[in-house]
Length: 298
Image 1 (cartoon, rainbow, N blue to C red):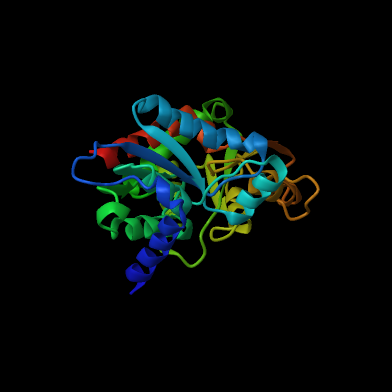
Image 2: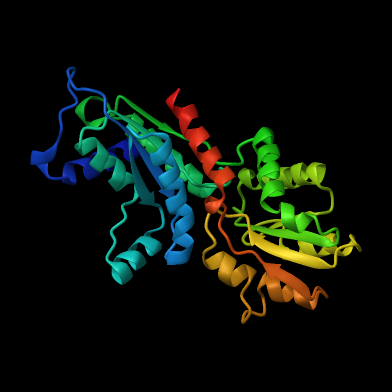
């Protein structure tokens, strides 16, 4: 029943498009491939660089394939439209338009770190479109895996983070505190614990990972830090594709008494350096993003 309702919703979006513009998906139609990058989004222009970097990486890696962008957050989409006049579609709107324009093979690549609630919603949209046959469906539609989908992914992310903070890690009294988003009451939140295990194997006592909306929380991070008496300096950074609102306010907000920055100061850590750069700007993250798209295309 859920898939039927989802398919009906998709079909209603398709039928709302201008009727004269529909492309036929007949037997003689040539293949037309496209990539849809699906991100939660950000309204901060400086944070947008991280998303644009992933989009550009896909464009460079697949020069013969059109790459488009969709945001899942309606709040962010409306804010951008109001403030900057830029209209960014939802994944449903973007896929309906691609169907309308005659795309036959579509690869949806989310920018999510873990397969949590937001990722589940993308999967639901792709499954709804895959249930449509004939002229309102695609010959092929697939969805890519997020960064932390299994144990090997966590090991790979640990390598990326080791390289990302190589300079800071050369200082033996410095630890890296990472803020993930978290997804409450969802099994995918366990991927943060798995990543912590991978980081501990790579550099024990140097990385401390928490989340802003689930577990482990900042008090858990502080408790672990206190058990490592050799830590004198901290680098705080988001484990998120973009360094947006969570990074600038919940993590490093100087005027917020409950920010991680101020809570760590209250815990006795005076030497704290924020590194507010989204993971999406990291070349190794972009490389992994492209690899996941290639996996879908096999």
